[in-house]
Length: 273
Length: 173
Image (cartoon, rainbow over the protein chains, first blue to last red):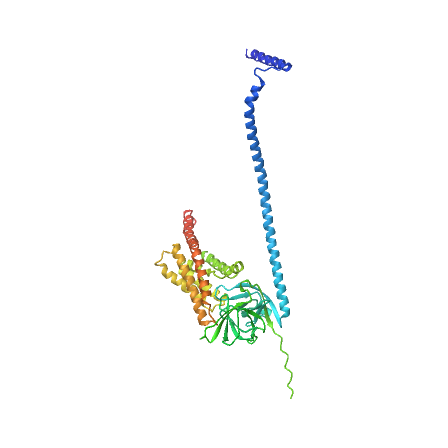
């Protein structure tokens, strides 16, 4: 019974298809289906489109993010290289300046790098990467192209400690370049030094250059120590209070020249009788 | 193990103070970075562990610095013993107590340095330089104090916690 029913159904189906193939047969007008289906299709199509767009965007943004990361990494690498290049360029410039200054110095000098600073804010010393093996010993002066820096406090075979001019223990015999007034430049462990023992009559004004006199036996004559920043004088004082801004920027000190040997002065000619 | 870690921390701080900080910024206004370390030892570590470390590093810094020999030894040694005395009456884990101790230590150290410079130097710092420097150091100590206190307390609280867990796991006798 079921088989017979099935055969009848298939046959009827084939007949309908055959008839429909010959001419268009429809129970309802085509437009009705279109009208019902189209909005849903459109909605689905829009949703799918949006979904696809989102997916493509997601995939693309993933790729863009990866690319972005890669570009950032390369940028950082390049920035690092640029900083290294700039650092080498600056070092090169400083060393050239130092070399030119070394050639102009009377006597022999050893270039040394600053490798550490004093652990206490009030004590202005630095550690150098050269020591006794390089001819550095206690008491020798250190300079840069900008001027005098300080003197060696103590030395081990491969390291030396340098007492900076701005330390409260530092003192250098000095001259006011313009007027030749003589005093002693003392560190204060602060930003400025004091030029001591300048008397009432001594001519000194802000802006005057202060140089080493060479009389202390430590620094060669004529090295720049700093510039007078203020002159304070009360009528009752014995000496003027003269503040000096150091020529060297001690916070940025990286290399110095230690003068290890000075030219021996030529013997004086014999006096005629 | 803890002593070794404290020793390592001490060396790290010395390097930071003499090489790291000067390379990154101006050293002006930065307080002695070993002072919090001394405070930590005084507050939280036994005398037999803390005192040799403090004296050893005091001696080391005296040799690294251009300061007269014994200045750092005095600051660290007396600071350590003084804080240990106060520890009996202070609530050591309070961030305010630790910050106040740091401020006191910074002030004590700077006043001692000033005294040494007055006694032994060619000259002394200008008053405005001294006030500016000490003011900046105290300011930094005030800002960093609570953070350092949290770090100290965290380090010390972590220790018994770990021990308890290991005990529970049968790791310790």
